[in-house]
Image (cartoon, rainbow, N blue to C red; front, side):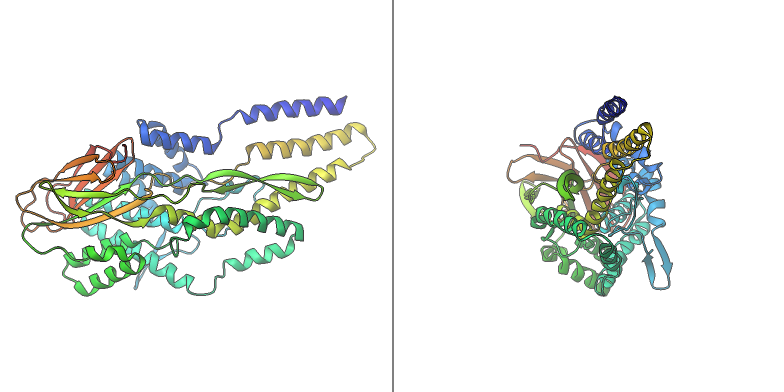
Length: 472
């Protein structure tokens, strides 16, 4: 009777706990708010994360991006700036990424789940943070600061490329930890990793590495060209073309009178990581273990054309497959995630099995021990989730176009070639010698924004809400 009453109470409490909204559900709600709402809930959630210990970096990225989407480039720069600064050491050779600042196969023995581990930026998210901080600088008329952030973005890729060319020391501790586990736990970790990897590979294998971003190199090349440093511009363009050959046609402006225009079109929002449960055998029982995964198939980029004067001036080419970068990053981390989550499940099950066989000689004490372990396992299972944290306001794909705008034109039209949906973008008159004009179009379905600026920092940068090209 005592045992039944205790377990009934615990079961009732677990039901109450299940009624709480999970962090994944909050992330879904924030995403919908960004796409179709006011963004108020998303900004509030990002602010709370930015003020926390474990989610500070992720919250700052989300908050900075959300401010950009509202045209608050000064506020965005104030949020993103400190996060970007703390990631680098300055040396005689240039910016160097501090060790431990990029998420990898982190080893940690947290009781609850991986969400208790402080969030470190994956390489592809860090690169977008640097690109967006460069965009903030351009929008604020600070081209020199924009150049600094782009140089850091290329330095990150150079450093990670060099480090990944050597034997991966980070994988060795993971293998050592596996050797201490039972063969059954190691097999469970391998089984879970294989299942998740199979889901990720069709998308993840579209890129070589999650730290490669052709756009960062291309933008750096534009700045070198602006400074008439063609030698370094060629190096930057060549590296951009190595990552994505589709970028090569845009490395030189078209001949003729008029102004050089570069269009960057950001399509949609990157997929969200989703929690899944994988049933795994532990001794004489089966336990469902939580894991993060991406479940969407490869996303076909939109076909965006740029028109001037009623004629097609250029076609936007997808140059950064962010979906593939995100999937590749998770695929690389999954072995470590699987080992940690399987180990935690094994500890909980072992504790319960020990408690089930405890005999103190006192019936009430026996029940109390069993109930305590049951309560811990029930509570930790209810509050435990797969670690699906990720920067969810970056695009799914980034497109690029470059063309010569006739001197008598002061607007362009971006058109979805499949649906016909179009949007006109006004280009304010720039002073002579303003240099390459940059049109940065962010399309988040429910709304879109367009930023118009020049690499030379002359003229008045403009920002406006505009029409999405993604609806039928």
